[in-house]
Image 1 (cartoon, rainbow, N blue to C red):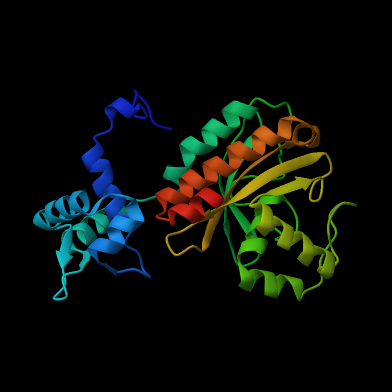
Image 2: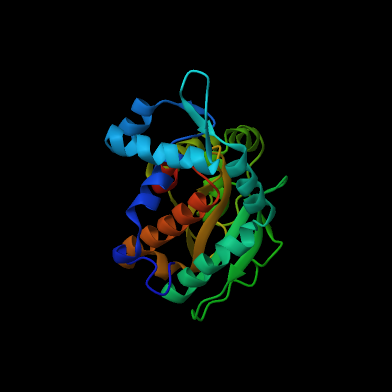
Amino acid sequence: MPANGDDDPKNVVNSVFRAGQLLECFGENRPTLGLSELSAATGLNKTTTHRLLTTLVRMGWLTRTPEGDYKIGMKLFGLGSVALAGFSLRDEARPLLLSLAGQFGDTAYLMVPGDGGAVVIDLFEGASPLSVKHIGIGTVLPYHAAAGPMTMLAYRPELREQWLARPLESYTEHTVADPAELAAQLDKIRAEGYTISDEDYLTGVGAIAAPVFDRDGTLEATLSLGGPAGNFRGSRLVGMIGAVREAASTLSSRLGSPKDLAEGA
């Protein structure tokens, strides 16, 4: 979260903000854009758009094509390479995990897909009296149980295809072990953008998870909260879902995920 008033609109330089909006229009599927396209995409008038683009070209962040369109310059590519070299998924996720754990008192988890299941790569415990001792850093969870793994299964087609083709173990009486029922639940997760786990992996434990996407729109990880099952029911649930989804969206943005996809996470 921004600190020291960094989220105060009075501290935002509009011209820099608008230049950033123009740069964010470029992507893998839109490597080259014209003045009219950039103006329409940002809502800026053509005069303002042209002035900003001219400045970005002067700085070397954009270049002109022989046809007069614009594309990302090597100088900006170099800055991106520096950012990637210093990027750590765990470092970027840590303040978000701490915030979730502190706000709700439950344990916040960062998981990534692995060969045999979802791998916990970081966690922070809140003040809840229940500590989920069975799940620690390095734990591998089956994809068809618990909120984080289920989210991965819903958003990674190759995992879904592989996992639905194998026998599914029941861990509690609430585990969904029927392939058809599981497929329907995965479709529901994708439609809603989050997963709720209610004692389907560990008795007495509930969880909420949301997907984290990379710059290509591929699920890279999940952020989740887990704790006493009773904490994940009733009116409290709405705020928890919103907070987990917002945290996942923030981390997706830091991974370079397209804005509309990150916000929908």
